[in-house]
Length: 388
Ligand code: HEM
Picture 1 (tube, protein in one colour):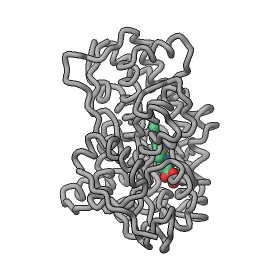
Picture 2 (spheres, protein in one colour):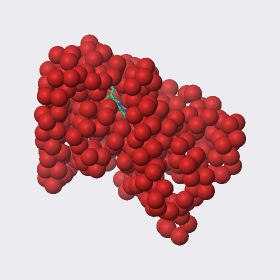
Picture 3 (cartoon, helix red, strand yellow):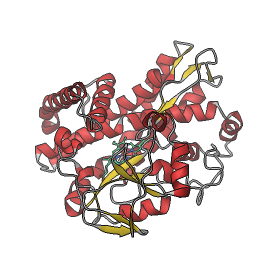
Picture 4 (cartoon, protein in one colour):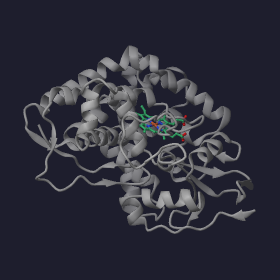
């Protein structure tokens, strides 16, 4: 029984491209302590699945953690019955059934409007002019914060993400996070009378109508904005990039040999929009001969699970014909992404297929610098210059 082996990473390199270092970890030290992140990383797919299900030890409850302090305690930071109770209220608003009956038609109008604006232009950055707008507009209707702009949603999301990763205590980052949280509270207050007077299908309305305490409603709306904006944005941009840079695979989709949802799943396997989910060790525990100590911080590395060679041959290649089913893109346990059905519908069924149908001559703009990806906790293309 040993403490986790120590593996150092260069944080800039890890942000630019975490995959070479994750591969080395999977091969040599699949459970290791990374001092620069102050966390034990679990990198093999099966270990992640086993650990995530063991909620008694791999706890989501992180008292004093930055997310709780800055955004209030939400369902992602609770275990057991406390978690189940909140999820039970939240989930019906975004379940596959709700997506089919309520949200899919709204997603279609959001995407159609964004595409009509693009049709008046001939090129631009699709992350800014399409992915960010579609993701933000969808989140407005899902949360019920229709009084916000997509631009505000995107800014609030980033400010909260930066705030909860602000381990250095940068006061500017903290201030921006406080401002975003206050602005969301103000937007909730402004919408409350309307959703109380005429309840609708939104998360705000459903949580308020259930009698959930208002602090908890607010915390879960903030969770939804912090976690529900950049992933769909990054997955839309990344999926378009993957198809444009692999014309042979685009052809398979256009000929109907492979479905759009398979492409969505394969892109998210290759570049997981959420690379990790954190846990706290609740009590001293030995796993695979590694000694974990109470209060150790553990990162379950979904990005690494999705490239585990035990499950995926040539795992760094984009191959829309592979079996993607072992992927952990949306998690592997009780905290499995509540927004998975909404994201799959928005991106895989609607946004990307409609864009390719409307602009059959869509290409990467070769006159612009190469597309650059960034991030290890969240990852996607930073820009996507294209022509149509
Ligand atoms: C491509 C888009 C998305 C990806 C890849 C993604 C991925 C994830 C992942 C990996 C987790 C953590 C799972 C775990 O720890 O086991 C998560 C949790 C969560 N996601 Fe998503 N997500 C996406 C979009 C969304 C959207 C649009 C929403 C809201 C409408 C959303 C709501 C949530 C919630 C509420 C949780 C916490 C669930 C719980 O604690 O029970 N996600 N997501």
